[in-house]
Image 1 (tube, rainbow, N blue to C red):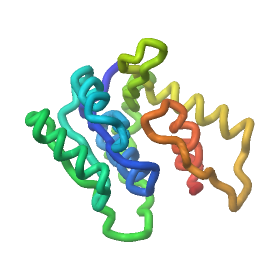
Image 2: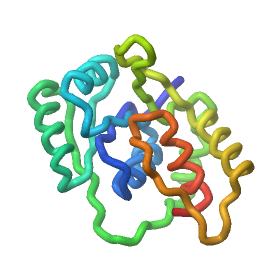
Image 3: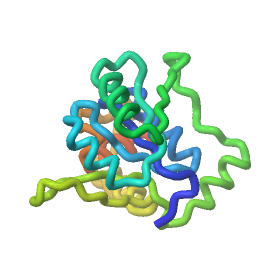
Image 4: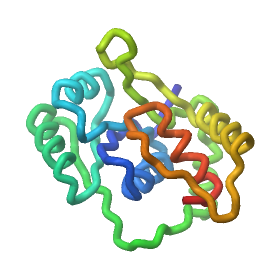
Length: 178
């Protein structure tokens, strides 16, 4: 599994900033790693320690994320922090220039999309890697079994830290839905 752009932590609640962050990270060639701002510092520490993370992105004006980001900056000084800035309420279309399309086409089946951490039965976080191909196959299956009507979308209520967030985020984004 490879990721040409590294790994970016995404510390946001379910929101427009979260979807924008995921798209931006993936389009840059990087993979994202969801970090729930509500996680206790001990769990965040275990996750960050177990990953090759170098940057964490968060939504502006989020009290929980701001507090967690301060903690990350003090505990992990080599990890940079940035805010996802939305300058408009309108969502811009995906880039369609040939360079962007060529880069997206170059992502192989094993290109890392995201890295999620799960505790399973042990209570210790373990990284689980998800590829572009696996996530796309899941999204295609989901949309074939549960097709969207013209004015339909999905209510996103699952934290991005849980693996199943991809079922609520990627199918509608790939179909241009909400």
